[in-house]
Amino acid sequence: MDASINRKDQLAMLLNEFNETPEINLAAALRPCIDVERWIQEIIDARPYAAVEEIFKTANDAAAPFTAEEVNSALAHHPRIGERLSGASTEAALSSAEQSTIDPADTMTAAALRSGNVAYEEKFGQVFLIRALGRSPEEILSALHERLENPPHTERLIIAEQLREIALLRLKAVVNA
Image 1 (spheres, helix red, strand yellow):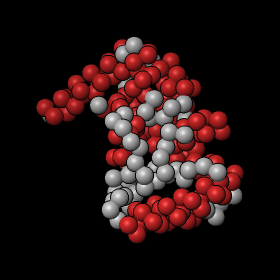
Image 2 (cartoon, helix red, strand yellow):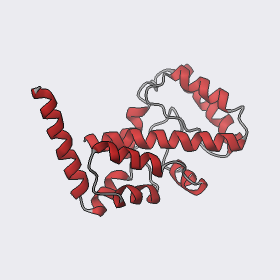
Image 3 (cartoon, helix red, strand yellow):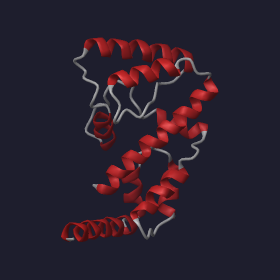
């Protein structure tokens, strides 16, 4: 019983902080989730939230769908799969954590990802994007090869969905921080 009360108190504090944080500070905290101004603003404008789950519902709804321009803008902030963003930014830390199952010292996987990334970029003109968190290198490579068979329209829909999944996972990290 004591643990559930403690969890409820923690959620209430998180919710109050989220609701009361100045807009400019909250926007800065949300931007590493996905740098899409409309998405950020919709989450901020829906405050105050009565429950933490409402934050995630609003974020999910705002991300479905992202426009082509929003997808292109967001892709500019994502490294190739198998590569790491440099620096000490929140976005770099989140990206590194998401790709933690990919061992940079595994030369076979690194070469396969490089080759797949090149083929993908040649076909689609943009980086291959996948929600890497919770996926093994083998699953990522398999998805990369499968998606190379997609027509551009199908791939754009998949990328938008992957961005939504990444944004929501990152939002959970931000809200729980």
